[in-house]
Length: 127
Image 1 (cartoon, rainbow, N blue to C red):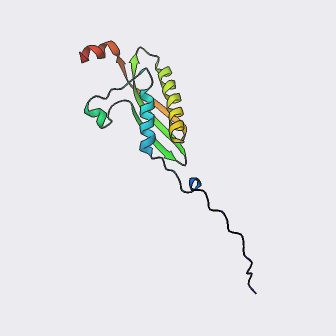
Image 2 (cartoon, rainbow, N blue to C red):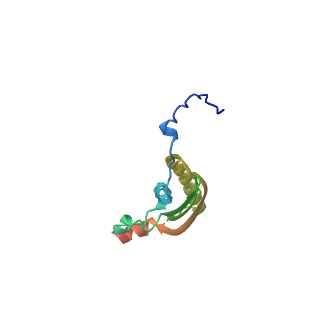
Image 3 (tube, rainbow, N blue to C red):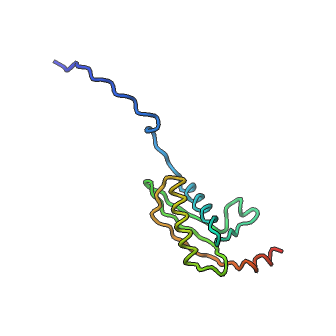
């Protein structure tokens, strides 16, 4: 004979525990780029329309997989600033900001200093 005993119904899973959250690579790239530009010795080389299409420096690329991310950042730094110090500041700030704002764990941040800008020379060219 078949078992006809009833089992107690289970409580529904709370809405906050259902579904999943996906953080796109482009979102991590944007957060990393903004975080990079917050470093005092990093220069934003984008002007006018290049800001709209996000060309120039700083530039970030990210690969997100399984809640972790590897990030590559290219920057222009001010002259004269110790470049290893700039890279360390960028690495630390990007790691913290991406983790705090996206919940993604950053496993690696590679920083390339692609340009060095002498502020006095840059100001003279603009004027």
